[in-house]
Length: 603
Image 1: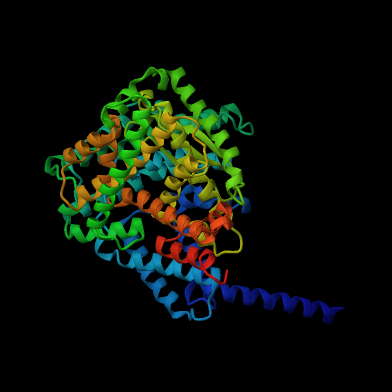
Image 2 (image 1 turned 45 degrees about the horizontal axis):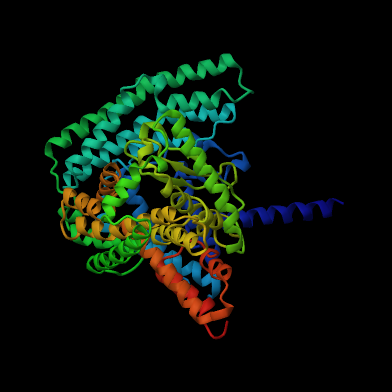
């Protein structure tokens, strides 16, 4: 018995030593296999980013939550370290022999190689962005993250929230450090963007602490935690109120003062061509977002061609409705037509939210027959937080937690119901939820048997291209039952085509903000508020707006190639399966995948 026990003991000990040795070797040296390297890549990226880790929710089931007390490091030093890590990881990846790789193993290698090469090529432009901006700036993302994604279900969660609040001043200091560093290198936002930031930060700090989103969201969730006595809840609320007043507001006041000083030095030039080596920076951003080698001039021409085509389709529908005005005039009239508007009241806004929910429920049923699988994760519709709705886009989507603890959220902007004509609501829902973003991203998260990074990596042209393709899919398979909704779809598509023209116009052809606004107004008939907000979005996010239409065009092109090749054997579900069930891909890799799987004689 003793000998047997000793053998068992030493066997277990040997296994533990081997496991620890393998872990240490994988962590600090070249991993023994590609699979272990992929695993290291994934965990490096998420463990280094506590906010993203919270969003993914992958450690919650293991009772590990120490990271929930911290915010993500955005210091200059950290960004430089991340770049060096990308260089090292590319070297390691290329040191593996890929000759014998095939199918998903080869695809994983190619996806990671493409991504790492792009990051390494970004060295010159590591600090060319505007980390504070009206669209997704750190100053608004931190409060939004804490209010919407930090879990608040237990006392530990509450204590973690309080600690994260106390970490906000440090993060704002890092943001300020980064802004000052960029300014010294002649990276300064236009004055009208700074006006937006000044207005936003003032609005954030001028309300009483108890009305701030951080306090209000915390209180609402805290009161639902039955395991915490009311008296203890009150004590936590006092802590949060004090943190907002004495720590967070002073930090944001420093940021406000910086924006006010920068405003004195800023100009009104909109495009990134004005930055050091700005033309090369824009070309890099286009490649990053479109995952193509298309030049700014080629993209501009595609945009003009698509604008012409879509406008002709709209004119045909308008004529059938007895409207012979120009598109901007006709669409402007329709946007003001009481038939298509909710009252701009609290009740009217709630009605709009309920309508989105109804459309989503219907689209889920209509979508089932077009796909071999549907996501397990659910999607819900919520209002964009009031504090950020003035500068937020018309809608956006937040992905589910990987552990299923949080559904996907389609956030709708209800700042003004005159901006929400009923004939455009279906298209927006299809884009953001099902069969758009939620369907694609949730399926990607739920893929089995792939390296973990494949469940989370995203390429803008694929992700946004799919969402825009979803709008067209709804048309092709009769989700729209009336001409007005189809007109809303075409106006949304026209808007994406116009983006190709305007984005390249601003950053390549040196258009002014006013020129860009004028072009969109003259060609779409969109509401002025929407146009201005969108143009200012392109200004702080160069190249990203081009990804939607180019991604959609590529997916449609591939679908029609497969349809012609397969003829009567074409199955839309099979096509969608190939496009979706390898996760997000650069368009060049997606095209090769579809050709190999569906356009090959051997298949």
